[in-house]
Image (cartoon, rainbow, N blue to C red; front, top):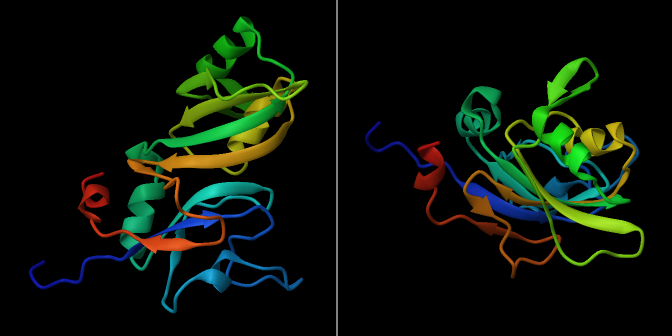
Length: 179
């Protein structure tokens, strides 16, 4: 529509310990406490113990388009798990595992960073962001996740120079409009 306002989009580096909710009855910090004034809609969620890229927009329509499974927008995470995945486990995670009666799978999985004692880091990509899906997939194979960081949402990567707890406004949102 000519003259229509372009949606605003914020990139936020969510730290562990913040909730992605408007208000918490227990009074814990939320991501909205750190944002500029406005009607921000979170694109997906990250649980309390997860960190990384969170997109927020003032457009409910754009938020829906980015989240809806039909559009298969990729999400990429770094996950530190207990133990090491064997080849059969990797195959299983790529083929699909029933999690609470629904099939879930990673599109890609690869080693990431140095191992830390009995822990291993993996980079995983999925196209749906159901509740705690990354954690639940690894846990289904007996590999609890101790750290989870969202590195990318669709074409947008977490800027390396964006400190946890800070946000930056996207200059060019056209890349998201085309998804």
